Structures are given as C-alpha cells and as structure tokens.
Image (tube, rainbow, N blue to C red):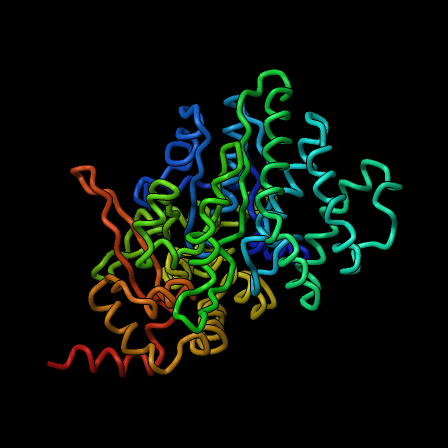
Length: 445
C-alpha cells in the first residue's frame, strides 16, 4: 500500500477538527447515548419560547459537542433564527485563566461583528470611546479613537479580546476596567441587539448566540474553597443571562454534577449533557450496538479512500475485526480518544493493515504518557470505588476526575422512558497496576 493512502487514512481521523453540519461522515449516535437529541433538547426551547432563553450544554471534551452545536446552528437557521456562533477559546479566552469579563467581551465582539450590518454600532462604540483613555494605555492602540473609521473602531473589540487571551501582564488591568463598567456595557450591548432584532434579514425572527468551548475552562480552586467555575457560571449567572436574545453556553461537565447543580437548573433550566457512546454495559461486557456505531463512524470517515482502493475494513484497514473492536472498546466510547488511538496506531505501521500490536502500542502510550500522569496517588482508591459502584459521589475530588476524563459518563434509555445515568473508569486506566492494587483493596472484605 502506498504511503499516500496511509496518509489519507491518517488524516481522516484528525481529532481536533469538528465535522461541519451536513458532513457525510457524521453518524447519529443518539440511540447509544441515551436518546439525546440536540434539536429536541436545546433547539425546541428556542423555537417555541417567546421570551429569551439561556441554556447550558456540556459533556466531556472531545465527545462531539461542537459537531452537535454546528448541526444545531443549521437547524435553527432553517427555523428562522439568525445565529451568532463562536468558539470562545479560539481567539478570545485563555482556558487556563478565564473570568466572566472575558466571556462578556467575547460575546460583545462576535455579536457586534456578525450584526453590524443590521444595527447601529453607536451604543457600543460610545461605550468603548468613554473607556478609551484607560484602555489605550494597556497597549491596545495609541491612536485617537475619534480619528478611526467605524470598521476600525469595531475591530478594537477584537484587539481587546486578543489582548486578554495572549497577554497575562495586562489581563487583570483590562478586567478591572471592564468589570467596573459591566452594567453600562450590557446596556449598550442590549441596545445594539434590540435594534438588530428589528432589522434581521427576511425570514429571520429570532436571534441566538452560541458560545462554545467554555467547557474547556480549567477549574481553579480559591482559598475559600470555591472555584472559578462557580464564580463565572453561578455568581455571574445574572449577567450571563442578561443578553436580550437566546443564548447557549457550554459549561464544564464537573460543574453540572457539583453541589451547585440545583442553582444551575434554577438559573439555566435543566442542563443538557452529551454522554459517551455506550460501548460496554455496567457489567463491563461489550455493548454491540455501540461497537457497531463506532464501526459505522470509522467506515464513514474512510469511505472515500476505502472505496477508491476497494479496501475491506476488517482485513485491509485493520488486520481483524478483533483489533478494531478492541480499539473501540478501549476508547471508552469517546470519539476523540478513538481517533487519537487510530492515528497513534498508524504511526506504528509501515503499511496497512493496522495491526493488533500497533493498536496495543497506541493504548500503552495513552496509558503511560497520559492517563497514569493524570491520576494523583490519592485518586486510585476513588477510581476503584467508581469502577465498582458505577457512580460518582457528590464530592469535589470525584468531579475533578470527571473533568480530567478519568471517569466517563454514560446514559441509556429504559423501556419505561426513564434515562439511567451511570459512570465508569476510563478503560485505558483499568490495566494500570496502581488501579488494580486499589481495586483489590476496595473489593477485599
């Protein structure tokens, strides 16, 4: 097999590029994800609600939230909505150090850029002008604000968020200046939004803002025991909900299962969760429908290459069905993990098929280089308890394991219409010696 074919297959599994809406490689996994449906769970509330809604969406990083949100964007557009979508950590927010003001400025920047043709930007530009003396001293620009053209003035919001993300030395100064004037910024932003809603293109009756990637914000615990997730999404919920339009924020999965979960529901309605693809059951047996979904996912990713070269999945792409199934199982039902394992396995072969030994190499690398280092010494017993009980206690240490993807969430629909939620340890961790030792301890009477 030529190196070009292997390279093509390798790039079919890029783990950090979400599928755009309508991509032929998309696979509907709702049946093995507890019947989740983003159109029903988030979209219908927006379509059916006259007052503005504010909803939150979560799931493990890399599980497919962005792909689902991009599908939702197209669905909402087809239902008469004008949608402003942005990935907050792409250009605006440093996920290692984020606060509420960063999110407000990111929303302002993207709403202004996407709606400037449908509204008068004057309220927001007046707000920025009144802050200009303080902000220009933070190395934004030395130019006189009034001398700038309108487009250049609008672009200063992008410069402001870029400075927040890239320059820690001025980050706190910008935040303090903005925080003092949050109320007036929200008033200016809503004045801009209200004018825009009256002038949306023909056929568009609602405005929706989707702020993606906020689930990536790393938890930072303060001295008082609270963390930045609480400060952003709980303490500042009033401001996050203050935009005069429909809004969806992604939030960290650990927050949804914290002792603040009732406040999350009160403030944002019931949070929607995108769980893992169920590739095994609670008794650790393979769950064949989930394994078949992953087979379909792999086939669709390589469809063009395999068809052009007439390559069979389980003899010429993989050396056997068992090799493919093992890889799917060890991913834990996590789509990005599956793609990372495939790419790493391909690194270990000179020619197709992907062999059992190459897959084992990929698993071993992930185990030794990533997950062993991710688990602290005091966490092994906790993980063993989760593995045995298939649930997580309502304690910060366990929620942190959920955020770090050491513990995965699964959901399944029962015959009575209930949705059963359960948790398990990432399969790659299970064979680590420290975990096995901890498991023996918790299972010994």
